[in-house]
Amino acid sequence: MNSFVVKVSNLVKTFDTKKIIKNISFNVNENSVTGVLGKNGAGKTTLLGMLMGLISPSSGNIEILGKNLFFKKNEILKEINFQSPYIDLPKKMTVEQNLFFYSRLYGIKKFKDIINDLVKKLKMTDLMKKNYGSLSAGQKTKVNLCKALINNPKLLLLDEPTASLDPETSIFIREFLLDYQKKNKSSILITSHNLEEIQSICSKIILLKLGKIASNGNLNELLKINNYSSLKDFFLGQG
Amino acid sequence: MFGRILALIIRYKTISFGSFPRLLSIFYWPSVQILFWGFFSNFLIENNTTPYIGVLSIILSAVVLWDVLFRGQLGLTMSFLEEIWSRNLTNLFITPLREYELVFSLIIISMLRTLIGLTPAIFVANFFFDFHLFELGFYLIFFFFNLIAIGWSIGFVVSGLVLRYGHSFEELAWAIIFILLPFSCVYYPLDSLPFIMQKIAQIFPPVYVFESMRKILIDNQVEFQQLYRIIILNFTYLLLSVLFFLKMISSSRKKGLLINQGE
Image (spheres, chains in turn green, blue):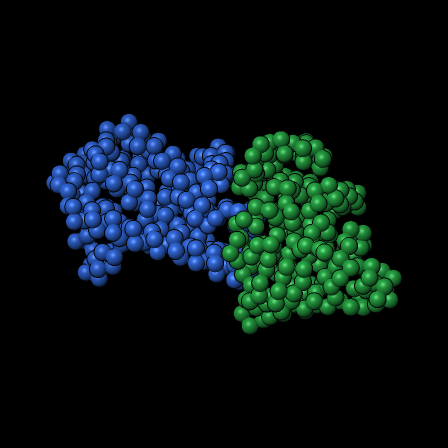
């Protein structure tokens, strides 16, 4: 029997009078990579925001790592992390200062060793003394990812992690994430418009359409049942 | 808790004091203000425009104490706005940081910025005008903490408004203090204001601080009733402003404003 790292029940989010998330329920398995797909405005970012406690749901329930997000938010936040190319780190601090800062916020002991290890693996040793604001998009993605892994999260939320990256860096990031997930037995929830990327790394997908779940399940099974040969065809047909 | 507060203080310290232009901006203005008012007061005394020799001491004390309020507010607001400008709010609010830890950190960094900004100004005043701020004795510490607390109250309100209602409120960070200035009676007694303005001024604590300061420097007397009033008003305003700030964070969560906030 699978245990769930995320359990969402009857989740609703309304901004003013507009319902963005319409009574959705789903689970995310432990030790899995799940893709959240949907066109612009489908509610992906709102959903991620609610899973991180950044957006308050209008109604419904979110459990992460067996704890209720409403009541145990700070305990949960110690165990999860997030990366997005659209969210920056402080530009006026060096990469090293940024990583030290976030390590202290997460209460990590011996953080210098952990950072050194991550920095080597992400091949960003030469970036440590540079100001974050002076980095290229690809370099920033690596630094953001390093920040996101600093607390060895049991649940990693990624919002289009390889957007605007060159193919070589995208492949590196993708392979790094898969390797990290396997070694640490973490769960990853990823949103992306890059369907090939989702198909290559996700075992399960949740397809959002206008705030509702249009499809949810094992990627290969969904393709087989619906008679699609690729995720792109499936997305165009169902999304 | 202390680790996270320390993390934020180190961050704000790096930003505030990490570069020479920023450091300069912190201690430059208070010193310039002291020089400006000091030379002006000397001019008045030398030309017998004012018969009272203690005017220099009163004006310079008022300049320094008003700057405590101003620097306190600015230090808190600018540190918080830095999180918005650097698009760092999302990352900050997904850490285990508690909101009261953010409140304490902002208060501490505001205190540090104010002390660092004013120390050279006090030395400048002493060197050029033989001015001794410590003539106020124990009451200097009392006035300092109460004025900086007023600055924090204003800072939390402005920060909450910018977070919730956007960048159009950023101008308030600079302007709001000058709305309060005429009602604070920094350089003149409360009696010199028109009746309506007197009534408005009495709602705010700065007027009692500056009235008490003048009473000590001119008559060498302390009006304890005014000191109690300062404490009660300040405590009320600070409590309400922190609650307002927390309410604005909560409201921003409901509106989805903590994602992608930035310039």
